[in-house]
Length: 175
Image (cartoon, rainbow, N blue to C red; front, top):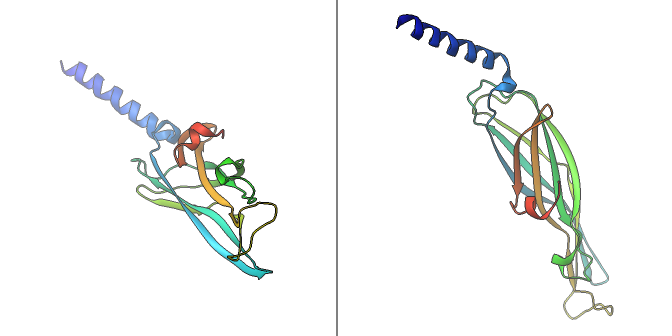
């Protein structure tokens, strides 16, 4: 009896040591959140048309929920989705524009956070004063829209986490 228990304990200790020596073998558990941010850059009024130029980006936060002391170096690939409104069509019928970006994450401590801003995209909005209209039939207001973000986190070449806001992006679009 004693020898079997001793052998069993030895196997467990060896397995945990090998997992501790290879951080990639441990499970990396991340909570990913993304919050859209719009910063107005400038506004102008020219011949009854108001124009606003803004910068749109996401503030992305990764929280280490795993039990390891620090998350190993990770690569974050993300794709921003936006629509450029020309005022001529229904905004939902406009094609989706994709902007790619990347960030490197190093050593998030246990229960720690890593926050970064994605690259910013320029967003325009135009509106004409009440009582005026476009002879072409275009709408009186148009506004570019930051639609969402899709994030993939990699350790080496292995994908370890994915997040999309809104979640429907993973079904409707390609990364």
